[in-house]
View: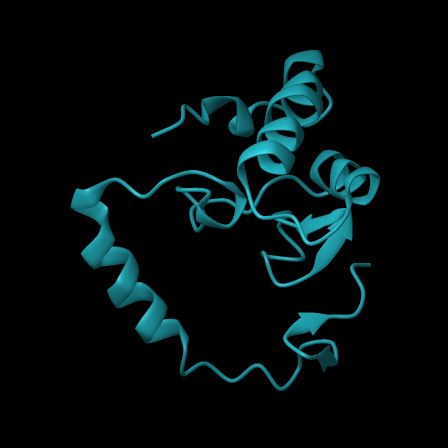
Length: 116
């Protein structure tokens, strides 16, 4: 697993900003599954439900921080799931699949249309 301790640093610290810009965004666009020039936004507000461009993700992660305690393995951003965790992730995905998402922004063909 990737060391993500830097995600707990103050959002306006130079190290946090550098890691968002240099590590997370570069890693995600190179190893993840971007859809054109967009990736899922993993800020505390968007919660990996909204697609956005690189500069929007950067702004969100500085202003709103990463989603804490929920997104430990960046499966939507190119990180591989360690085999010992796969069963737990599958169980969590099944549990979450029954949640009511009626308050979510409108969805078009499986992609949310905006990341505010």
